[in-house]
Length: 503
Image (cartoon, rainbow, N blue to C red; front, side, top):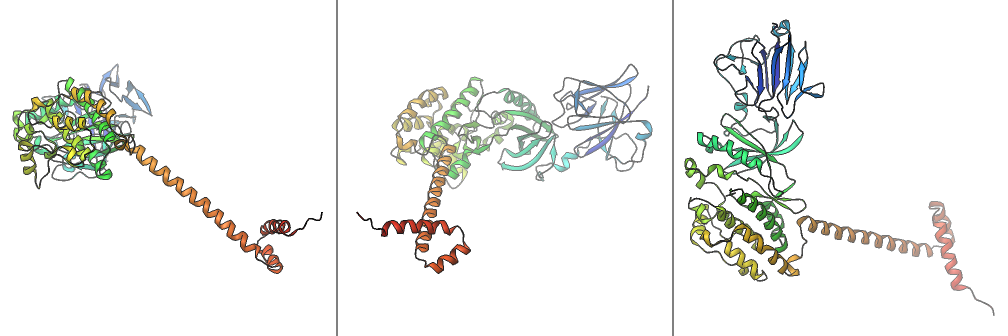
C-alpha cells in the first residue's frame, strides 16, 4: 500500500503528514487524529482512508465540505499534486520524492501511539519528518492576555480588524469570518476567570444554550472556541451604536425614544426568562441601537458563567455599579427581578440623563445601591408622566419581591406610551428619523438661498447694462455676445415707456 504525504497549510502553520493504514480523521475536536483548531473547520470535518487501492477524502457532513477547484464535493480521490481545502486549511498530496525534498516546512508531525493523534510541532533542526514529543501552539505566542492582540492576525478562521472595547470581563473585537465572508464581533474572555476547570465545563454548556436563542431583539451567538486558556466566542455584527454612545451623542433621548428602546429590551428579557435564564448584566453597553432605532440585547448568557460557587469572588467584581441590583452588589443569588432592577436604572438614565446613583468611586455607588433610595425622575423633569415615574420607582425597589415582573412591565408600557404629551414625542420616533429631518431642513434652506442669489445677481447685471452708452454697448457685445439679447430687451422696455399714441 503506497503511503503518500500530505502538506498542510493554515494560518501561520505549515507541516506534513504521512498517511498510513489507519484512517486519518480531520476536524476541530481533539479526538480527531489531525486536530485543526480554526473556526472554518467543522468538529468532525473529513476522513482520509485507503479504499479499493485508492486514497479517498470523504466529507463527514461538514458545513463547508471538501473544496477542489472551486467546487464543493463530498468525496475526492487523491492523486499526485492534487490540492483541496477543508475550511481555510489547504492540503496538497505529495509523492515520496516530493516529501523528501529540501523544501523547509515550519512544522513537522507526530503520531502519538497511545491515542493515534497527529499533532503539529515546530522543527528547527531539519526539513525531514520527525517524531516530536510535545504539542506547541503557535497562536499562544501571538495571542495572550499579557500581550495585546495585534490587528490583522487570525484566530481560528477569524481575522482581527479592530478593537471595540474592553471591560473587566472580556475584550471585544471587530473581526472577519473568512470561511463565509462576514463581519462578526469576536469576544475574548479575560484570563482571570478561565483558570477553573468548572468554568470550562460551564462555558461549553452555556455557549450551546446561548446559541439556541432566537429572538429579534437578542444578538445571536454564532460560534465559541478555546485555544489553551484562551476562551472566545463570536456573535453577529449589528450596524449601530451601543446605548452609552447614543446617550453621549444625543445627551438626552425623548420619552418616546426611551420607551421604544425599553420595550425592545423588555421583550428580549421576557423571552430569556421564559427559557428559565437571566441576563444579570443589563447596562447601556449591553444594548445596541440599530440604524433604524430598534434595540438589541448583547451578552445574553455570558454573566451566568460566573454564577457559581467556584467564581463567587469573581462575580462580585463583574458588572457596572451604576446599573447593578442591590442583591448583586451584596454578592447574593440573582433572579429575573435583578434584571428588572437593572432595566429600571437604564430607563431612569434615559429620561433624566443620569443614572439613579452616582459617586466618586465604585464602592460609594455600590453602597448607595444597597442603602439609598433613588430620587423621583420627576424631580429632574416635572413633565414626566406620573405613570412612568411610578413604574421606574417600582422597578427600583430594594426588595426583589416588591418589583414587577418583566411581563408586568410590558403590560404597562403601552398605556404609558399612549399617555405621553406631544412635547415628549418631538425629535422623532427614532434617532435615525431625527437626523434625516435635520438634513432635509438644511438642504431646503441651502436651495432657497442659492435661487435668491441668482435672482439678485441677474437684477444687478440688468441695471448695470441699462446705464451703458452706445460705445460701451458695442464693446460689451464684442466681449460677451449673450448681452445682445439683454440690450434688445432693454430697448423694447424703453420704447414702450417713451412712445406716444396719436388719436
